[in-house]
Image 1 (tube, rainbow, N blue to C red):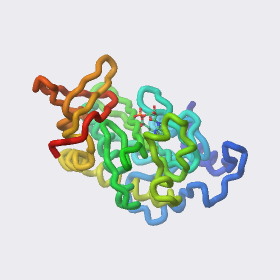
Image 2: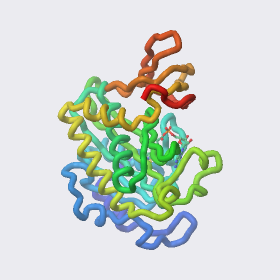
Image 3: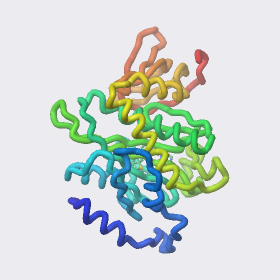
Length: 294
Ligand code: BT5
């Protein structure tokens, strides 16, 4: 799918406001990009904001636009996704009322540091939610943001590199905002939550999006200045599982140990029962016992 950013913008403006069930969406229910831009204090992130009523996946469109050369900071946002994706092609359920977006970055860095983009984005999401709504947020490696130990947000980072050069990185962020938990399939109801469930009311997604773009840019600046320690420090402060006994299921093996740290590659550092240290680059983490050391 090749799209011209200009034609995309036009398409956006002409999009119908029909909901997936055929019901018309009221203006109050849809995200208003001009309201996001009102007072937006970021300089790079959020220019432009490309708004869609419905997309297969905001990450796919953002990647396509990045391939065509769209500038760093461009944001693709959709009211709903029909093929929202998680890691390893897992399904990301994206009902109306959520905040589904992707941001294009073009960092001057080597692929080794690309995982920092996921780390800084999860810190930005966690801190935006806690500041705006006074909810205690935590991060579960590698990319989940939790409220009350339930997943409220997930991040999918995809990049294109040429040798040692990063062409672009697309950070896809999903935040369960204004929908009831019943909108998710039964098997996700107990492990997930939404802002509406936690607060007992709907929130203004424009404000959430604006603040998220601003804070993401602040953390991206730390990254550009090489202040990885600052990002990692904030990440560690939110990482609920550090110090806990955990099980990590990777592609080929399951490892049990104590989660002790995260490094600049985004790798989880574990101490195994025999006292040796292991770094794990990807996988799914399950907390077996809460921290005794923190
Ligand atoms: C993630 O993957 O958590 C990354 C999710 C990224 C979604 C955003 S939305 C905007 C952008 N466009 C996309 O197409 N994607 C990004 P992972 O850690 O692999 O978790 C996926 C798992 O989370 C699924 O297998 C389900 O178990 C669970 N899940 C699916 N939808 C969920 C939801 N809405 N809330 C909570 N959990 C969900």
